[in-house]
Length: 495
Image 1 (cartoon, helix red, strand yellow):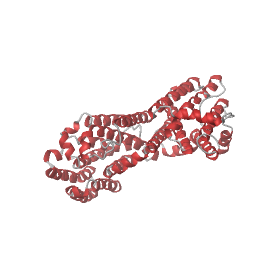
Image 2 (cartoon, rainbow, N blue to C red):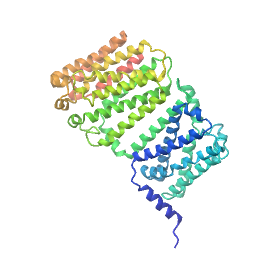
Image 3 (cartoon, rainbow, N blue to C red):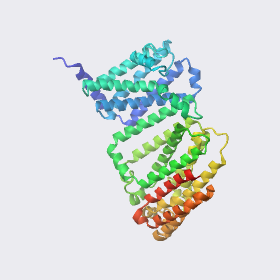
Image 4 (cartoon, rainbow, N blue to C red):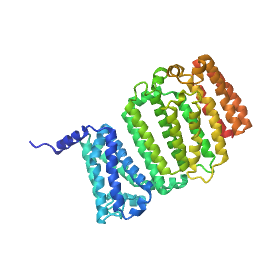
């Protein structure tokens, strides 16, 4: 008796899904195939010299293909209810079909890769005809699309119902059309919300964000239980501290003569990657301390393995490098490199055993102002003196305030030989010195800014800080970081 064709399809797909590939290998293979496609696109395109003269365009091509690939993985996984890793294995085996369109370039049938632009009616016509009659796409692009849709359908029908398979194919094609029509969705937004970035930079930044978003979704989806555990174990006070840094970024952005939302988002993303790098490096360096003082942190508790930490750190550094290359801002590049160097000196090289180690994180966190300002002005001809004053004000604020975080870690810090107020003076005296230091943070900021109203308000914040540090056993660090956040928010409106 002859077996049904779907039996053979299921058998082949099942074998592919069981290939022992991890996400790291899938990313590398996808990058190799995409790089080959980009190389063929550049060398065979009629705009070869224009493209090669703009390296950021190559980054745009790369992030566009990779983000599309991972968005399709997510789309087909949701439609088929199959684990993401299995869908990724199947798609990576089919990814070489992106090498079909360069055949058209070779034969002179097609022109180059571009977007679908025009009215919605024209785009709908191109979508229905699979771009067969589009001036820049044509037959070979149509073949690529049709093969993908057929492959997606057979994959879905081998795992789910006919109706769900058809809907899944439409969703996958909709994803493809979305990526192919980015100017239609984002051109006007870019025109009104981007400053200092070229057209290629805008779309390179957009697709970098989409790629990072897909990675984050896959990581969260894959490690849903792990992430829930991490969320509930994460200290809420540190979240408040990060929000305070975001407010500092806003303060820096407001020092510009304009405020563009997407510029701010790019600066925030860059700063978030830097913060993630510092946290990962610090957790790896302080594992012995955290096992005593912070046993619930993701790494010290065993939720994240050493290989996970190295992978996440490498990903943040690559993301930082890509964003800095796309933005092309020399000030942001210098600031980020200095911050990474300071973070390396502070954690892996154990500068934190020096009693004045708090100066390094204070210098780093204060640069949030510069990320906010230079994201709005990527290529400044001059830097307002007010930005430098704001940076120095935040530096003083953090110098006096940062020792608060050492109160909780006194046991681990003492055992590891870390020098700070708590380990030098002991718990009671160290807490008193920390309280005095933290209570000076808000007046110091206000005095440096030179605002009398804010200075008077800072006295109230100073008194509250003194109270909460001296009652640390009862209240913990959360109200202290809340005071920091609320003070900086107040400063925005007062100053």
